[in-house]
Amino acid sequence: MKPIGIYRTQTEATSPYQVPRQPDESLRLGSIELLSHQQFEQALRDVEGFERLWIIYKFHLNLHWHPQVLPPRGSPTKRGVFSTRSPYRPNPIGLSCVKLQRVEKLTLWILGADLLDETPILDLKPYLPESDAFPSSRVGWIEGVTDQKYKITFSTTTDFEQKLTWIQSNGLSELIDFALRQLEYEPFDHRRKRVTELKPEIWQLAYKTWRIQFSSHESNTLQIIDLESGYREAELLVPDDPYLDKALHRSFCQLFPKP
Image (tube, rainbow, N blue to C red; front, side, top):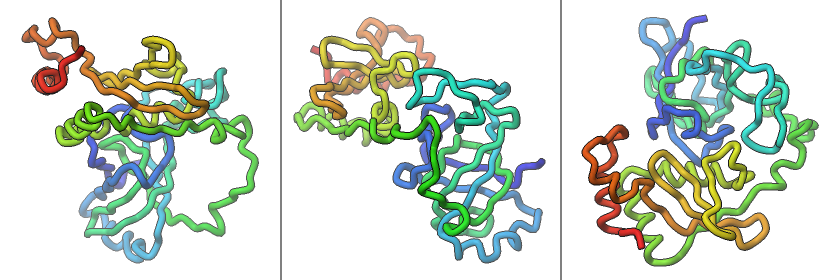
């Protein structure tokens, strides 16, 4: 098989934890750039008449497969890989249903892809509701998982809202997207997440060099209450900058010093 194109995400998602676990059109806009000089202009004829497309692609960063995997939610034990949507498969082929926005020459703009940036695309096929949707089908061990979903709210304090505005204006909206994805199911599972309990009912989730604090005072409801730098003050004084983000953290800490 040879790729017919490549996927480009608008958020530069390059690691698995930066993309949603399943396609979700509310999260991200991306594009598929098809190769030129392959007669794909003709192959795209009539595609815009379909609202949704199946995207068949390659898990290009997966070099090995696992017969059993620990799902990101819903199961405390490993499951056979064929009963999951894990990318660690014998043949690293993925399948996602996305919403088509428009076609511009050899570029398809789509919503809701759960793909990494530069994912090789193998094929495109139209989604047909009468053939592809079976909402009453049994779902095995996943039955009832959606009932365990947490409601996520945000603190309304002035300090937090100012931090949130700063985060968004400095190109770090992915920080909030990550928090919502990680916390909506099994938010306290430290085996799967970089989460620690700071004190009773107050937890902290790590994302790269940032820290997200949340509280859990009600059943199945969480509140994100604070955003902090993951660097200690002494670390920010050291010139070494492996993640190339210390200038951003210094600016943040100057505006929002830790107590």
